[in-house]
Image 1 (cartoon, rainbow, N blue to C red):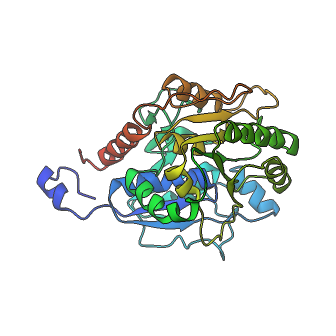
Image 2 (tube, helix red, strand yellow):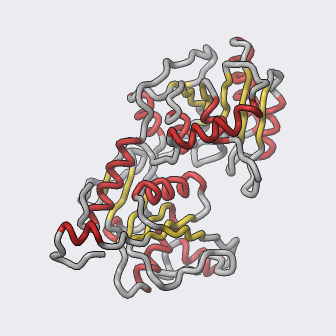
Image 3 (tube, rainbow, N blue to C red):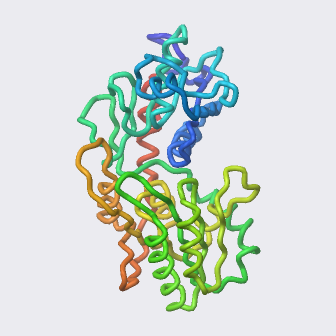
Amino acid sequence: MSPPGASTAARRTAAPPLIWALQSGSVGDDQQVLALAEALGWPFEVKRLVRRSGGIRARLARKGLLGASLACFDSARSSPLTPPWPALVIGASRGGELAAAWIARRAGRRPRLVHLGCPKGSPRGFDLIVATPQHALPPCDNVLMNDLPLHRVTPARLRRAAAAWAPLLAHLPPPRIAVLVGGDHRDYVLDPATARRLGRLANRMARACAGSLLVTDSARTDSAAYAALLDELDVPLHAHRWRHDAAANPYLGYLALADRFVVTAESTSMLVEAAASGRPVLMFDTRQRRTQGGRRDIGRIHERLLALGHAGWLDETLAVPPAPGAPPGGRDLERAVARVRALFGMAD
C-alpha cells in the first residue's frame, strides 16, 4: 500500500495489495467473495473457514460473546490465518465477519475490511459493506447499496461450460428448461409436498413445448424433497445430485445451455446467476409463512428482479416472461471494484 501523499504515478507502479478471500461454507456468499476478488485483478489467497459442529465456546463465539475469536472454527480443517498479513480482507456471512475482526486485531498494520451482505455487528467495523436491498441497512458512507448480489457468471465462463457440456446434453430436445433447486431458508420451506408441486409444474412446462429438463439441487436441498421432485418427472431430462466433492458439476453447463430457467425463490444467488445468462427466469415461490423483524428480506430481491425485467413468477399458467435485456450484475460489480480501489487511493 502506498504511503500517504504518494504520487499517482508511484501508486500505479506499486505492488498490488494482497487479498485474503474468506470462504465460510455458504456457497452463495463464497461465490460473491470470489467474484469481487477476481474482478479486482490483484493477487489473492483463498482462506477456508470450517465451522466447529458444536461446543459451548463455538456457540459463544458465533454470538460474538468472546470478542474477536476463532473459537467457532475448526483450526485443523481451516486455512491457517498467519503472517504475512493481507492488505485487504473480503468476507461474507457471520463466519467471515468474525474472522475479519480477529485478523484486524492480530495484524500489526490493520488491513482494509470489506464485507458482502449485512453484518450482525456494527457496520462501523468495516471499511466497506457491499449490500443489496434485501438488507435493512441505514444509509452510511461506508455502505454501497447495489441492485443485486454479485456473481461470477461471465460470458467467458459460459462459453467454456457450453463447450464442455454440449456433447453430454446433445440428446436432450430443446427447449431445455433448467430447474435450479434450493432448500429451506427462514420463511421459505421446500418440503416433499412443495417439491412435488414444483416437479409437476416443470414437467408440464417441458411436455407442453416438447422440450426437456436440466435439474440440479444444491447444498441446502433436503434429499427427500429432491427425490419427491424427481418422482414427478417423466420427460427427457438430465438430473444432478449436488455433492461438495463432485468431480463434475453441470451447474455452469446448465446456465450456458438452458433456454429458460425455473429457480426456487429463496436462492438469490441462483436467481441472479440464471438471470445473468440473459434468458427467461421463472421464480418458484416456496414461502410458507411470514415472520416479522430481521435484517434480511429477500422479497426485495424478487421485487428488484421483476422491476428490472429479469424474472417472473412460475404459476399454473406456465407463462414464460420475455427474454430480458442486458444481464444483471455488471454495473454492480464495477461499482464494488471502484469503491474497493478507492480505499487504496486508486481510481479506475
